[in-house]
Length: 263
Image (tube, rainbow, N blue to C red; front, side, top):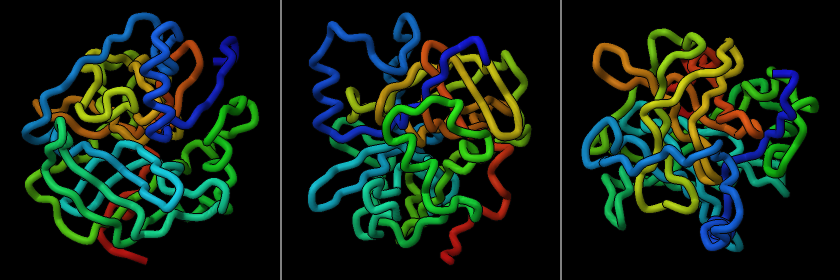
């Protein structure tokens, strides 16, 4: 990866900014390499209905990401999606919401956060705050990137939406076929993604694919097929300029991290 100029950007975006991007058709879409290969994905049933909005609704802001139900009340997303950058702490639980299976104003259910869990070594939110803008990858270590995971424990089950399990092969080989799905800022009301991506880099703490993304895709799943079913192989957290999507791989998710227990 050293020949490339790697720029990590959080894929979250305020709603008004996403609208502005959509209106500036003359500008290239950040996160799209070459042709935009994404398509709308029908999400009326599992597993696709398990993917939804992670919404932060505060007094002066509306912050939007994507996330995946890995259990009826457990959402896996990017840690930077639930952190208030200026205050360097988690958003209040009352402001964190998850809406599953969003499709043109309809959904498979919504719930508020009961608690949020971060990895134990996510200290001070230094890395999470940094990728709110653009940072040279030289300033970030794999140990920092791999911390960008969060579990939102909801205040109720969203059983109708279904769930997506974690891939059994927790390190996906390079050039393996993968899929990505999320709710980017310019297509917020429909699930959008690709089912024909490939892995470019794969390691314990780093997964890079050639999937196209946009602001709002943070927290969306990278998926692999196992026994005819899609399983979560990673969580999208950023974009490597002129290369592809940066994700935290399933290998970096502690097995006891995905429980519905609150600290």
